[in-house]
Length: 125
Image 1 (cartoon, helix red, strand yellow):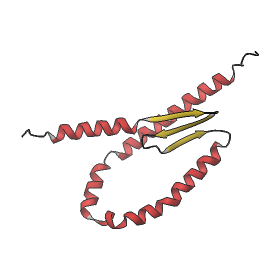
Image 2 (cartoon, one colour; image 1 turned 90 degrees about the horizontal axis):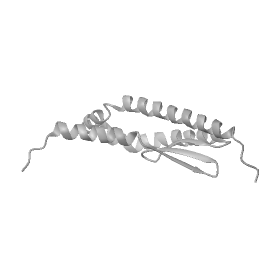
Image 3 (spheres, one colour; image 1 turned 30 degrees about the horizontal axis):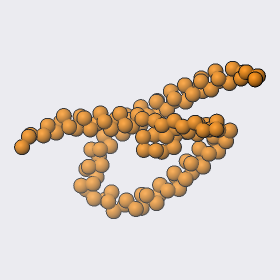
Image 4 (spheres, helix red, strand yellow; image 1 turned 90 degrees about the vertical axis):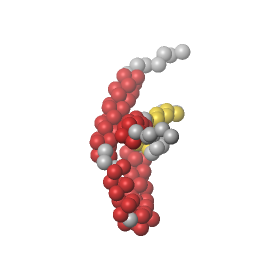
């Protein structure tokens, strides 16, 4: 049986996790632009009512949060789960900062592209 190099495997898992967390999906249909993260969570919607849609989305996320917390209360109280959770969340602050920076860059690029395209008139055919 082959000896498993757990450090090498751990590094590969971390690199893969980081790469997946950086993935963004962009869909544009009928002038509506949507960006999702690797898990399919909605990051942004660009339409006339974008602020209202995102506010409603954030309200829905906040509404579900205490329900999820209650459902996981017993599990989170377990010391083994706490140790595993601490290990897996060790890099979460760094990854979140990188995700936010990437989102900011994507938003800036879209804004630049949008305004550049907006200044070009379509031909009168």
